[in-house]
Image 1: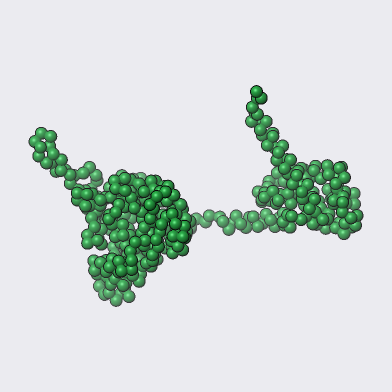
Image 2 (image 1 turned 180 degrees about the horizontal axis):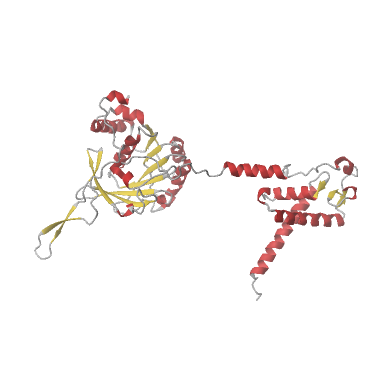
Length: 404
């Protein structure tokens, strides 16, 4: 049985193969030349043809490549494949070219076919310009979150920054659309808001907006004019749907996507979220999904939450019909050291429009001794009715004409 190759032997073999490959590259370049060339010119052509950026080649690496090229050209000269121009070392032409090539091309740059006719320094400058154009440039005042209002005063729980995706999963009839519309209407005076709907017809949208208008004393047509409402089927597995969704998004506004549909292959749901994230610039996307009851993840398991900066789940208590919101991921808490993931936020939905925090539901347990029912609160912090942050309530104007 042959002994295995040692790591040092593998490294030596790898280095030998690389040199052989480079030498073959030199020979290929030389065979394509039609005039006089120098060692430096062949070295530059080798760097470019090998897809090595001149800007990343260190002086030592350049000298090693130049030495390899010089040795290969020297061997070709000894084997009669090349001849020196005017007897000078380092200046060659192919031996099979006419003798007058030396006089025609002497002292000028050689013609090397099959490679970019690019000077080393100009190539390096282009590379540096490309890098500079793609440099990340933090803002002058870093760390400033976006001023966004959330239903249930959730801005007291977390912060969001430009280009942040927010994921919200909810069971059927938990109030996804009500939450989404409240979010849109609370921010319509401070931000550009795009509401991408995958369920409602135009008639249903009009009905919803009329309900909101009546609840808040605002003409429903004003709500329609201040938010850009549009429709997309939003099937996560349909590439045309996702392309349409991306085209409808506002990279620099608040995008409320109600909701992305997924019926199978749930593990792929992270792909449209990656595309949504890439579409954002200074804006955010709040993406709604369906979820199964009483599980702390979406139908796509945890895949949709990988890119999200905030992820929350909404369930319904079947006895009281109260809604329970739990955070499964909060990247940037509103207060340093806080853990919103530990908070349970109970709320109610009034008239299909108004969301209000409430106390946890009361549980009734039978006493083992007497069999009587005992009343106690569920073991969660009392999160009831926290005040809305300043400027985040939906304004009710004294004069409706102010909104027109």
